Image (cartoon, rainbow over all chains, first blue to last red; front, side):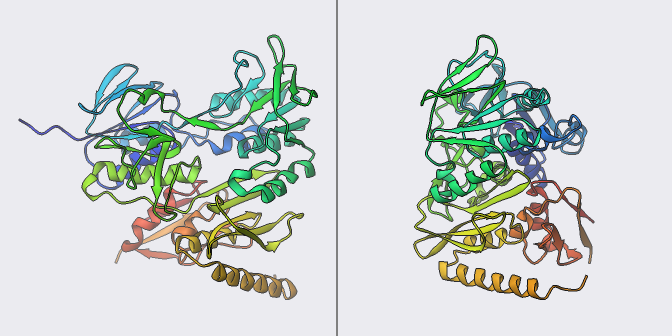
Length: 417
Length: 66
């Protein structure tokens, strides 16, 4: 019997899937690679969709990550785009794409997550989520028409959309059911500080009040809130989080929970099957806890790791990382490194919470657990490295004090030029 | 010994600093919010991490040249 040629199938043609393909080739994988994607587009970059894609004056192109010729000719990838995965049989290693069988020797699942919607708003014109290029185009054209905008959910995506809509001159209200925005990713106090950026830039932020109904016959007219108030709107963007796309795996036997339950090498409960990106839950050795993260950086890093491990399972390497995410609001960059969950103390080490720039450190036990920065691009990654090394709280504070002293000296005695 | 060069596309770089967190002896985000190279030429043993920095740049601002 001849040996079957190795076939790596990557399902999910966004950032994590693309990285899996690239990493496998870079690691010397010479077998067949097939990249399967439910959208008809080549892999494209999603972060710009809530930012420049909405604000650029000229109608922007799709932010494609890799051209087709590069994928086909240089990386030797078979593309199956516009074709959703519909099922998986791990016993005979068969993926079903549009119900057609595709045999694999190794598989990386990177099918991402889908935005949660508000039930009953399907088919109501002017109500959108933002995940895909098609969503972004619809929102952009509503903003072209000067839409009065209501954003439901004051998370990062919702806040970026609000910021972009303001920049386009729209009247914007953000409605958040929780008493403070972003309490889970950065804690209540810092969530409130970030939320104040909205008010300072002319966006109305309504916290602690839920949405009762989205009104309108065929087209949205207003958002009615739980306190009885009513906000007229031409555009409603719902940014209330995402749910991992696991429905197609229900009968696969793969262990599911909050996404796909992976081990520390990103392998799923099925041999030869790995997962990466928004869909993957894995125990992060650096934090000794299971995580499922929806960040650009984790998709890029996990995609690469899953691709490498999938083609060489015997030498699979544990995936560990210090999470990093960013968000751009009103021309200002917010960056967070580490993990805020379970923090015991925060400390402002640079700037001013009411101002346009700051760094706040997060303590858990005697360790540095996280750092949040507003417009402090030169500082934040230094804390990411410290967290990776398990730096103590005292060490981090000393470092911050030294940085502040150096900055003060520089300000008092600026270098020539 | 063969050397590589790293190019930073200053139109694309917005100073995330992911590269710095991978190789702090090569990359550093300055007070101008842009990445600066601390070295100019690199040897082959640094390739895997430089490739990682290129791959994980959120704005695709880095390029390796042989």
